[in-house]
Length: 52
Image (cartoon, rainbow, N blue to C red; front, side):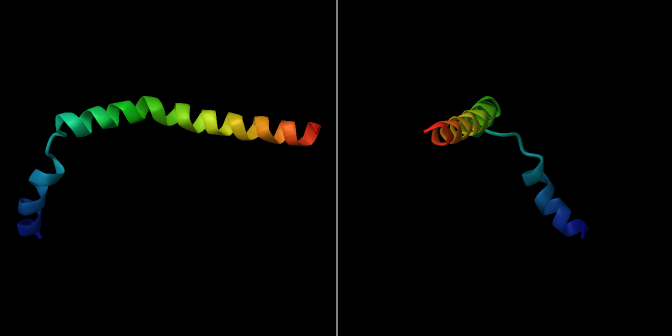
């Protein structure tokens, strides 16, 4: 078991690179915006469908 940890631990604790770090930071901001925007558009579409 320790043999596996010695091989895997450096991989698990490695720092993120510039590209993957930037993508992770952008998704933390963009994720909620995408979710709430999609939810708002679905609610708006349902309201329009019910009123016509």
